[in-house]
Image 1 (cartoon, rainbow, N blue to C red):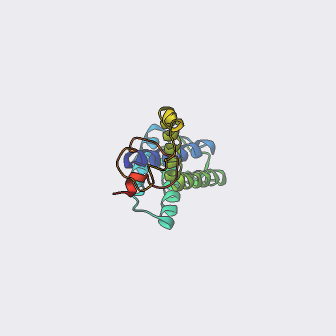
Image 2 (cartoon, rainbow, N blue to C red; image 1 turned 60 degrees about the vertical axis):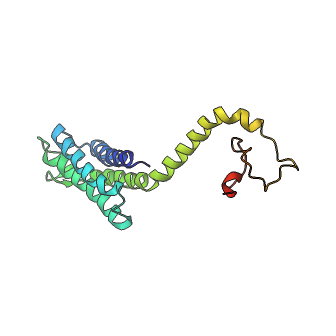
Image 3 (cartoon, rainbow, N blue to C red; image 1 turned 45 degrees about the horizontal axis):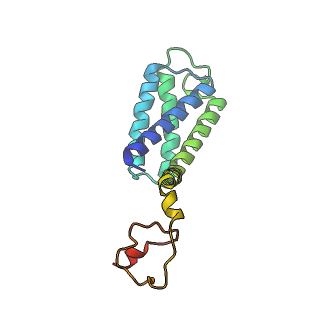
Length: 172
């Protein structure tokens, strides 16, 4: 996955799920709190997208980001947040929803590359299949006079349905 796209997806997943969890748990959101949450999400998404943070530190970072997003939203709220105990400590409902958001974020970050690869391969096969269909149907097998050893370049433009590298790559 390209790094800018990876960075953007990670940031939106962290911040978006944090804001959704806070809202579902009846927390209040202000523009300033959401802006701070975006900056926090960007600050964490940069090292994650570059592959600096792995496994256990990644889990701690994502759950820590959920706590920081919650704190930024509570601190910038102009009213007493009824989803907290004493204004800052999250209630049971708030903890549950932030934990759900962090878990979903971990799953998205962990499987993002494999899903992206599968998605792009599927699109490439569908799009590529539209133009190559006639050449696949018109492909003929090797004749006896043109054995598997011949690498004269006459077959370079043909599409073969087989596993492994094309024959001309093996001749080099």
